[in-house]
Length: 298
Image (tube, rainbow, N blue to C red; front, side, top):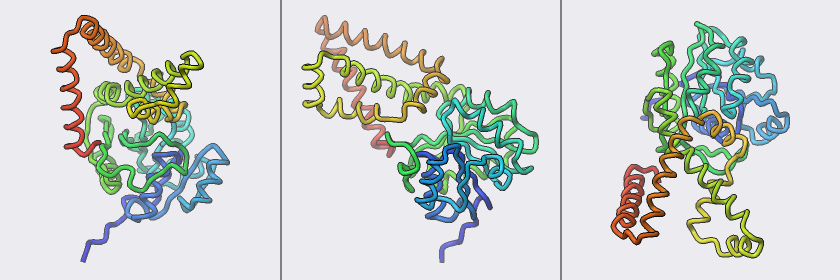
C-alpha cells in the first residue's frame, strides 16, 4: 500500500493566483500533499471572484495581511516589480516560523526588494519555477504545469535548512526538478534561456506590425511555423515581461549585446557566402534542440 504523504504545510497562502499561483493551487487541490488548507489573496476583487468560482482555495481574500497571519507558508506570485510592495504588506503579519517564498523570474532584484523587510523569525526561500505558457490569470493554471520542469532555488545565507527542505519538498510534489544556484548566476542563465528569447519574440512581432499595410497583411496571412512560434511567445503577459526586462536589465543587455554580435557575424557570412559558418550555426542549433528533447525540456 502506498505511503500516505503528510502535507508539507498546514496552511499555504498564494498571493497572486495567476498562471503560476493558480497552478500551485490546482496541484495542491488535486493531490492534497502540499497543504491541508489553501488561501488565495489578490488585490483585485475581480481576480478573487474568479478564484472563488473556480474553487481553487478554501479562502479567497483581498486582505493580504489577514491572510498572511494565518499561513505557515506565504508564496508570492506577483510580478517582480511588485514583490517589495507586497512583501511589505505580508511580512509584518506573518507568524513566527512561517516560511516566505517567491516565484519571481529575476532573483537579484527580488531579493534586494525583500531582504530589508525580513524578520529573523521568518525564513525566506527564493525560487523560480521555469514553467509557463503564454496565458495568464486564474483560468490559465494547470495542475501538471511543473511536471519535469526545472525549479531553481537561490537560498540566502540566512535561509534555514528546515525552510529550504520544506520548499524543496513542495516543488518536488509539484513534479518539478530542482537545482540550486546563486542569485546572480540565476539571472545570467535566465537572461539567455528565457528573457532574451522573449525580447526577440516581442521585437520580431513589432517589426512585422510596423511593415507597410499590404506587406503586413501578407505576413499575417502567410505566417509559417517559425513566425507562429514567435507569436506564441509574444502573447505573454506584458506587465510581467516589462518588469522582467527592467529588473534584469544588466544581465539581459549583456546577453543581447552578445546576440547582436553573433547576428552581425551571421549577416557577414550570408553576405559573403560563407557556407561553412552558416552550416556550423545551423548544426549547433540542431544539437541544442536535440539536447532539450533528450533532457525532457522540449
